[in-house]
Image (cartoon, rainbow over all chains, first blue to last red; front, side):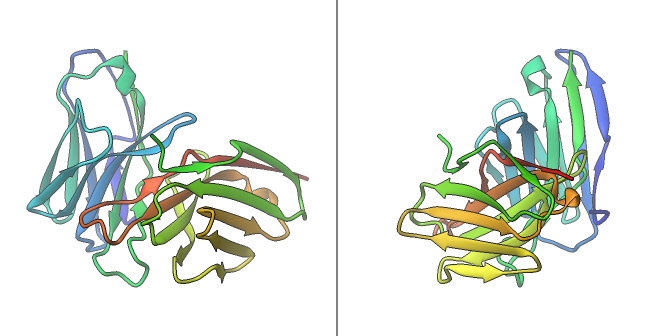
Length: 115
Length: 114
């Protein structure tokens, strides 16, 4: 969905490096999410934010941190990347009290490889 | 453990057949469910949703059935086409759990052959 963009789309890095993945949205949604996707495991929630001052840990937050710089921007950081963080990362947004309850709109994904 | 799961990781069908993708959930407090479709190289896209006060909802070529008694959800695709080939995820949400987000199942890969 072009309304939710992620940068970079692909990244290869080395163990121990700090990495930031960025997400921007033009949908005007309050809520933003970060997921990781691994083969056979589906989507697992890392962090989510229901507004600029609200940050919540998801199922697998260890090793990650986030920053909600503005309503439209939500970045995910890996302070010291490790190989088992190699995965496909998705950002998503949803509208508070939207017509379709909690429907989430996903970005195109960032493929991260940690060597 | 997984709150939401799918019975089969893969499903292969012939073009024109009807497809049924199943999902079991464990949280009896969940009251909203969504089916997403993820094509190769793309993010998941919304297909259809259903609230717990309903047991059936229809869209264009798709129907979602909800059985709260056995905590089971299914997605039916009529006259399956090659363009339906993708990974399908179910997701659940419990509105009485303030501040929670969707929980996704592992996904079923649908392959449609001509």
